[in-house]
Length: 113
Image 1: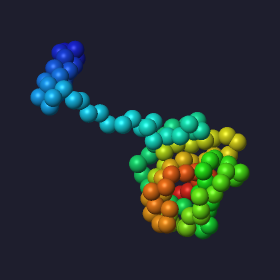
Image 2: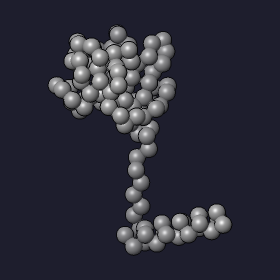
Image 3: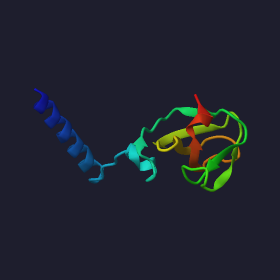
Image 4: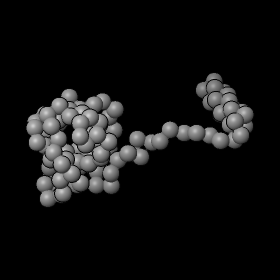
């Protein structure tokens, strides 16, 4: 029974693709928004907030990385992936405030729900 349903699903997809000129559109994978320095990919659509004032937003997962500026308390942040050693850093995109739309790194202990 399971193969029959799977076969019907594939046949429906092929028929739909043929109807629309053969193009099949797929959603990007979650890994499409991660960073090569990450060693833990856990994309999360939830918004997080910066928990302190003057939190550095950086180009890399280290205090030695260049600061892109400082984030204010309550700034929204969308999390994409993590660099876990020797400190835990989150890579993501700022979704509110003066750095809205920029991607970069924040130490995880400065981020909250």
